[in-house]
Image (cartoon, rainbow over all chains, first blue to last red; front, top):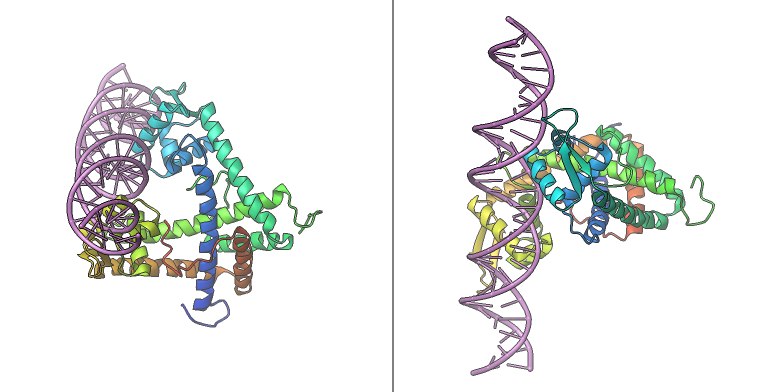
Length: 165
Length: 165
DNA sequence: TCCTTAATATTGCATACTGCAAGAGTTAGC
DNA sequence: GCTAACTCTTGCAGTATGCAATATTAAGGA
């Protein structure tokens, strides 16, 4: 499959070039994300930030919902909530619906962290986009969409938080 | 390009669209990488795989060089090498150059892991690229290069291993 | 209604990753 | 030769992670 010049086929150069280009772009995004997270005073670890972002999109949630969203074991989410609650970034209350559920919610300080990191990332990405020739921006969006559609990845609902690093 | 009154200026739509498109593409890459790593029998953790990839590009290396490459503390690299050596994936010998240095090297089993994961990732990415219209592939590469050049990120030297997840 | 089953949170146990600090051995430079 | 820097190593602490077991609570069926 690697090298057949049939219509619809592809040669190795295509794969290598696309892979390298995507890899480099991803690294740039990751670097921006890491920098913006490290810039926050109250040291929040990447997994903790992911949890905060999850809460900000999910709203008040029970523990298993949060664990499912993050793709971790409930016990892991449990301890992370422990630490974040101790730090005052989230609150944990008994759910009014069911007495076996817990209602985890973003505290004001937690929301502030998400907002601050998000704003910084947005500004950093905007700075890069601003350095791109304006005429190339649409081409980039279109090309990326073609790629992700080919991969069957659902479009990113997340607008800005980039809560994956 | 669509609506850009000021040369070099940009509006919020540009940033949001480019960000969302890149984010989705990155997630696809990350998903492919995670899948290919999880498919390996001998469970290797993502950081361990990064170390193996680092060794495969660096060749035999001393500990601090490895730690620098991975961006971790030497003590972290130390323990990771401990575990990988115990698992037979790397070897650790006294350096012939200097008696204070240690020579860490990929063992055959370690190289096999890198090769296997790499091959799987390459095949998965190739499958996605194959589903893209052939005419759009160059546009994707060009657009991504424009973006990364604007971000000042050096091009990815790594061809395939994707040792970042 | 009562009983069984499922859901939910929680804790115990084990492992991995991470950094900081200190120490011991080794090399380099002066 | 002495001092400084380099290198590896270990101790300590905190975080992340999963599996297994347990207690409590809700749901559903006989």
